View 1 (cartoon, rainbow, N blue to C red):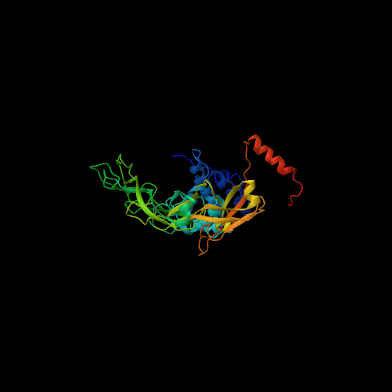
View 2: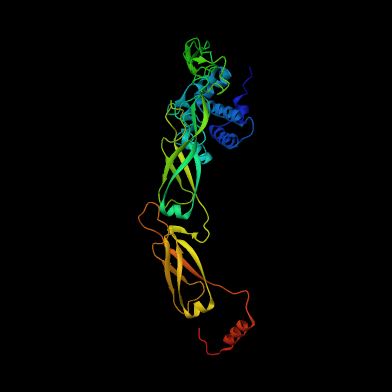
Length: 373
């Protein structure tokens, strides 16, 4: 059995460090070793170690017991209380464990089970909740305009068909944990002095609170009782959704059928369009190239839009970079009844190949003195 490192050594602070010093050092190490950010081997164990050290050293009473008794008097304090663990993070000035890690790590915990973000065996509020699922969905501008019903595949869990969900090798069963006698918890009694005794209760480390152990695990599911699969579901994307938005579908995430499903998060990406450029507030830009004669003399053009073809009259003398608008021919504005506009920006189409006569005519036009701009 490995020996625990000194908590002061874990946080790299001396034994006279202030609570502020301990807090600052913990936050720095938590950012460095959190397993959602640090994929190196051993990062998760290191993160657990520094979190355990901070849980004790940030609390005056627990720190006092640790200084007096060492790990014997402190390890149960950290592992045995969900409420105490939440208080650790409230002491820093955040609302709770969820708040601190959303602020420290930008909410990057979607891949973890919310009920046990550290893998310590704690339950933070929701029992037997499946994991959230995050997927990406790409849409065309036309699909953004009309909305879309889409069939997508998402990861899922199903009961292992080999062990029927027990996690045990076929023909075997779970056995009562002898460490906790099937209770899922163990107690330890400490005599602080001859007048004072305290008792700590912790989740059984052998069976992790289940009360039973699997001596021979199922080879198909690795004792999990469930296996990964994929399933198809139908989703509805509303018109006007914007690039970078995320749709949240409650209860459509991962579940094995025996737990509350997590949520499904769909991140929207809008594909580049061949002729339109998406602007803000639902507007789309369409660059229109016209010949010199069309700009000078005027013309009528049939334009493509996201809703079909439209006619646009170009008056004589139109200048390059002039702007025209087709009202309501843009994209629906998300959460509103209005639509953006199609903005037409005039460009000059310059010919690259001219006959000798065409060159002569252009030169003659340029030599004409009575042209007024």
